[in-house]
Length: 273
Ligand code: ADP
Ligand code: MG
Image (cartoon, rainbow, N blue to C red; front, top):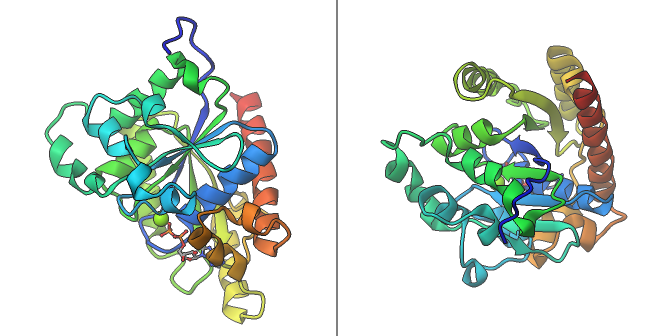
């Protein structure tokens, strides 16, 4: 399974926000599915010990043989941990609760921040992972060593932001962490964009938050806004992305639009590089 001729490194995007419940996992699953639906080859790396991305993609705990814990702490390659999903073109490196122990286990290792980067860099030599064009990393709700590993491995950070009163609170801390990683561990890191999630058009506050975030962050904010949509929240309990559960619902359609915006930005970034 080892190829001598390295393939092109996939674009690596970390979905990060130290707040829980803002839509990181939902965005990883549905953006990943939408990208796969338009022909990209996508790997979702579940870095949250809760394993919501793994469950939401129908990979139950019993079938998670190798996990991202083994990748960060053992000698398992990402390609070995990878599992197919019900979505053609979308695979998953699942997580297990073992990830809770990672921080302590690798805290004193010299390469502690580079464990994931190394695993992703090695993907280009793995024949099982040929044609991979995107890796989406679903981060835990913290700015811990796990998230630092994700930012060190990533080309870009995508920030899901919930349309609620405290949306911008904590954002400066997140941006500061991105700057710190950029200054020390990963100079090429950029912010791909900020996506507003759980937008409720009937709620005045949602509109106000959207206006505030746009005036603060400008064109870093995607035009696509993800609406609050009950189909989106139902889908994980069926172990399916919303796009498979109900393609026509407003949430699925929004994630398809987000995918084309992400690709458009990637093209612009590449052309500028
Ligand atoms: P995070 O990964 O940031 O903790 P999740 O993606 O797990 O956040 O989302 C938190 C909760 O909100 C989940 O129950 C999820 O199903 C729900 N949710 C996320 N996005 C939407 C949406 N657009 N509409 C309705 N519910 C949503
Ligand atoms: Mg999550």
